[in-house]
Image: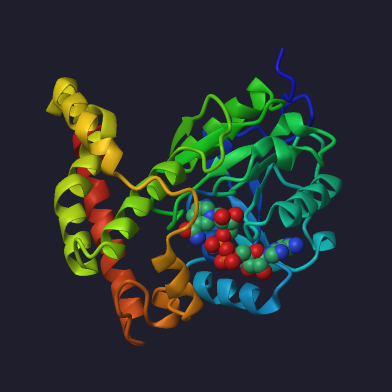
Length: 317
Ligand SMILES: NC(=O)c1ccc[n+]([C@@H]2O[C@H](COP(=O)([O-])OP(=O)(O)OC[C@H]3O[C@@H](n4cnc5c(N)ncnc54)[C@H](O)[C@@H]3O)[C@@H](O)[C@H]2O)c1
């Protein structure tokens, strides 16, 4: 028996028809980088969205970013739970902090129906620790989107120990209606899958920069036009199958002892952050980001992503 039958609870079932009727209502908590694109993803796919943020400036920026393509019926912007109303799904996307997220999730649970799906977009905080504060953890799980959330297809779905099978199924249905490619993890580990891989890659990149083996321009160039482009097409494991596992084993035997295995952040990264070089938002990170560069770069990156995704959808469905 389905533990959380939306029909039995009088909620709108997450079906294609209800998406088309704009009957699926979502709340996005946190109107920042991710929240803005999550709201965009939802209303573009027929959902009715309420965006909640405690910071009025961020809420206004989010409104400004979305107003040219949405109307007041599609997206509402509020700074208080009292204004939120009923919904089928909550996506929590506030600042990455365990205590804050626990507080926000508890608050969400207080205001929404017992059967409403509650998803967290944490980048890697333990799902079971987040669930500890909930009275009904069976309808809660991790749905880790990638930036920009309206474009990048993958979503890591991370059930906690107490998440019901029905909640996982409903989340997968929802994500598919949003045009996503959900991939379910068998257990929750810190950083999930993508951030573990991303950080392993970055640990080695930073070590190579620190040791003076290569500069930032050349490193990006090598990764983009070699492993980057092939990873996008094949993924790491299919790529190894193509190369031959015996060859991979031979290389592993001499290379692993030389790879960076520090358990603390790189000193180069610590220094850059201490000097205020935070990347594009401060004008300098590994690369220089002149003031006028941001929007042009965003437009170009979006166009490239859309082109690449269109090609991949044709080739690899
Ligand atoms: N930025 C990324 O690339 C990325 C990718 C995947 C997942 N994430 C995750 O998504 C979440 C949000 O990240 P972001 O980059 O959008 O951060 P952000 O700082 O841009 O936005 C976070 C927002 O949460 C709001 N907030 C804080 N406390 C709140 C509260 N009590 N109620 C309502 N709103 C509150 C803040 O005002 C802020 O606008 C984090 O968990 C992050 O780890 C980020």
